[in-house]
Amino acid sequence: MLVKVYGSAVFGIEATTIVVEVNIDKGIGYHLVGLPDNAVRESSYRISAALNNNNYKLPGKKIIINMAPADIRKEGAAYDLTLAMGILAASGQIKSESIKEYVIMGELSLDGSLQPIRGVLPMAIKAREEGFKYFILPKENAKEAAIVNDLEVLGVENILEVINHFNGDAKIEPTIVDTRAEFYKNIDFPEFDFSDVKGQESIKRCMEIAAAGGHNIILIGPPGSGKTMLAKRLPSILPPMTLHEALETTKIHSVVGKTKNHGLLYQRPFRSPHHTISNVALVGGGQYPRPGEISLSHNGVLFLDELPEFKREVLEVMRQPLEDRDVTISRAKFTVTYPCSFMLVASMNPSPSGFFNDPSSPMTSSPQEMQRYLSKISGPLLDRIDIHIEVTPVPFEKLSEERKGESSVDIRKRVTASREIQSKRFDEFENVHYNAQMNVKQIRKFCKLSPESLSLLKTAMEKLNLSARAYDRILKVSRTIADLANVTDISPDHIAEAIQYRSLDRDGWLG
Image 1 (cartoon, rainbow, N blue to C red):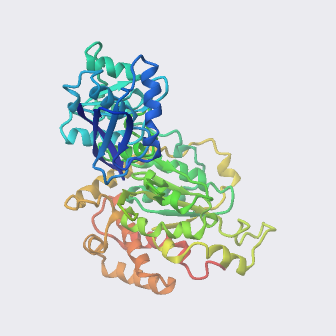
Image 2: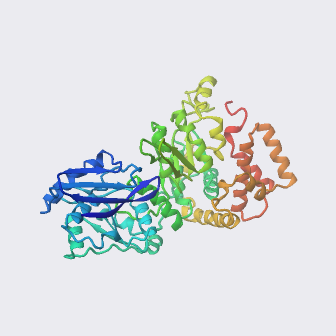
Image 3: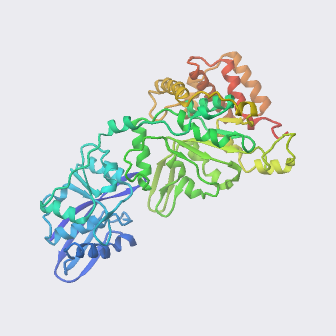
């Protein structure tokens, strides 16, 4: 008897429906074809033990299973339940009339219980697109899949529940999530708040500008000046994620299995990889490509602490994704693209000792040591960072103050108002939502300067020896400063403030 059951495979952040054809005939043997990897091949042992432990059995006949399309590699143990239900249906141990309406996925334990799987959200979206009515999967993943409307999600803990469901002995209750209600109920503020920061008013202003325009920022200062503390508070002033952003972010985290029991992600991601990270772990890749840290930071913040300590080749592979806001990983047989529209926040000491031009410090670095230290970060990478700001240690008088600083809630209101202005401005453009995403044509259109502003910028360009890319960055930042002030035209004051935020471009910065 021939039976077809349906599963799903994830490539990049999109899913493809897999048709599992099970044919049971005279003879003996178990043959699995259709480009399965070792984990899929080993499924026969898990299926056999799971069925035996629940008083069912593999038929002692010739079982041929084809996983189509046969040119796509099937990987992982998530097909165990799909294959098991196909075998039971083909051998007449369960009723199979309605099985074509189901997508079935799950990894089996030897006792028949189900383990959580990865990539559930893209699978559920694809199942709905292709007109399936039901999605059977492990209970731990049910909340995530139930984000998708018009698809009945049936979470199960054991293979016996699925068998009873098809035989009509006990129906599985669907998991229901009101996505919009859950999303708006759970929009919350992170634990870190700018009201805890003493002093550092100019740096807070910088952070506000960076958040308002989505600009990349680098903080330069000695140890203990508060760089990491400030960076950790940046997500608290970013506008709340939209439902579309939340779904897109959840899809990426789903592919790497970081959404178990959570459902939709409500907070903007904040990723802070260690400086020993490899370039594959940062941008994504591997034999079967997975998203890297830059994609896991999509719609959020990627924080690189002690930037010069990262390997140079690791930083260089970030240059193209920073510009294009997606990363394409190519292999001989397929290519996947992951989105990576993130805010880069980096921090660094100004010198190997950490103290630069500090007369009170006994530790000084020679110009050669300084040059060697700073040369770890290439000019093209620094060009892609819109805002460079020096962070100075907070004096004791400020540290001992009882007065609280401005809260993240108040700063976030101004940032959100500025983002709304930008959303209206870029309404006609599909992939541009805030100032940092502007291309050259949009910069020329939306960042027109008066003669005084142009003259000021020309002087700064010549004196600081800035590149064409740095010129564009200054215009983008000045546009954001004008938006925060709720004015249409960019004034010389806005240009002057934006020029201040290019510390590392200044000649003589090494002293």
